[in-house]
Length: 282
Image (cartoon, rainbow, N blue to C red; front, side, top):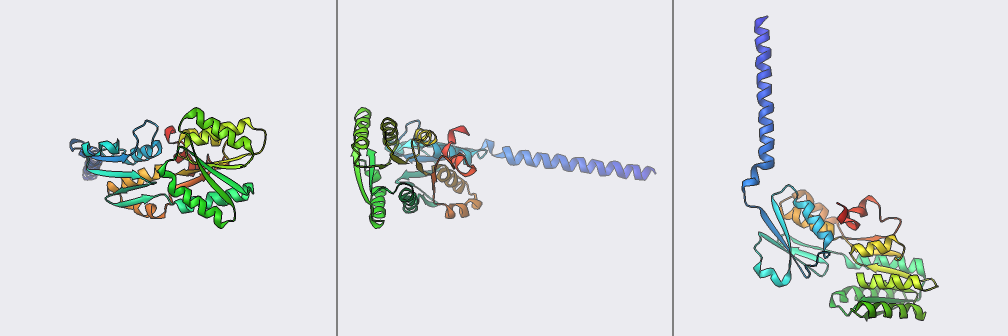
């Protein structure tokens, strides 16, 4: 009887030791890297404004969580001054880094948005606008022009002013003229101007947007925009960081992504869209 009791205590002792070893191993795995220098990743961008690349920043920050990794976003003019283990170059709707590149599929995005516009509006003439003649929109303008030409629909691009007051007046004049009933605004300022003008004019006007700012999401939610083409910078930032941190499971997801969404008021609060449309909520 005593031998059985002794064996019981011996078994309990070894079980307790095993549990303690597991706990210690878990703690080591989680905090063992704390003494090491953090892995630094720098995103090189064309703007350090606080609201620029907010989606990509959120995705990168979530990817780096609990990984002893520091994420920086730096202006391209300061790239040479930055010390980092890895640099990610952000330009022309793509990110380029040592693992390759992730790029928004602009062809598919324009095709999907264009099909929606033709189906919903039936407008024979469509005007694309932006705040200023910015070269970064050249590719997307060419793709839109080719798409509408093949569809037998007339389209035109007009760069408006970068001055806020002039932009609003120009947008109002265009919508008031009646020459166009459908507008595609290619950036935040032109989206805001188009939606404000739409509210002041007593006839049916369709406004679509291509932009990534929280202000444009607001105009979608408030009904100013029919739909918003939203580049999925959140996933681009997240996947790029995970790949650099050697997360092999993320590679398949990177291959399958087009890195854009077309959102409207019915779909903007879906599970897939919330994390990219509202990164500031996280």
